[in-house]
Image (cartoon, rainbow, N blue to C red; front, side):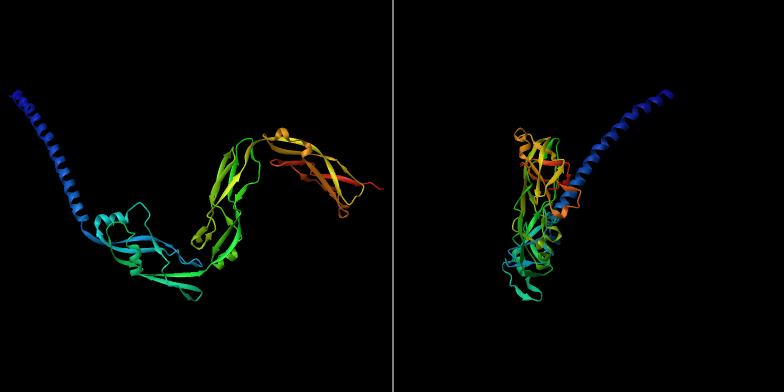
Length: 334
């Protein structure tokens, strides 16, 4: 009897396993149907019309040439829209910046205390923005419902460009000419308070590393936090300089004496010039291409040394050191 009972138990267990195995497909079918039902419900809901708010950044164009907009930084508006759920979702969560443009050429500008003023009502705003908003949306309202503008007279000033440059050179390479900036001056247009304190315009930061060749690159000009109040005659400058492979060389040259003709004797009467010379011109450079001098004046009679001045150095050659930088002297009685 024990053996029969055991066989019955063994024969029943596979049937139980098959029932459990069949229950998994049913669960999967149920979940798939549930997901499809939810998606269909969501699709139906998003097809309905809703009213919601979307925030936009606004840029202003065609301001009067003889005036400058001083409150252009207040450039965010909220638009209440009546549209399908799909369209509202696309408008609110689009990865692209939401920027609308308002044309100021039709404003009626009037003189006011401290400048000029104008305003744009909601109907005029909707008239301009309606065609710029994507999809078939209906604008229900705009906040603020009126945009106010303040203008100031434009003042102009020409200022130099200051390079904000950081660079490093590759081994045995050097800049062998003046760093060029074109243009060197720009005309700045702004309000009087800014123009009166402006002495130069800086470029944006330019970082160059391990340079081993000449370079010419456009660099934007920096405007800072009050960019909306600044207009430049050009928005960028071209920075260029020559980078060449160089070698270090030394040249010994005679030292000339200038001054009031005193019978002056200097010690030493020659100096050594240590410099970096581009390899391309190194074979053509010799000591005769340099000249140096000291100047004696009666006011220097109490001095013990005279400073050495280089009066002629070949182009693209960079002087690193003059040995010595000062010389001793004596005045020989006539």
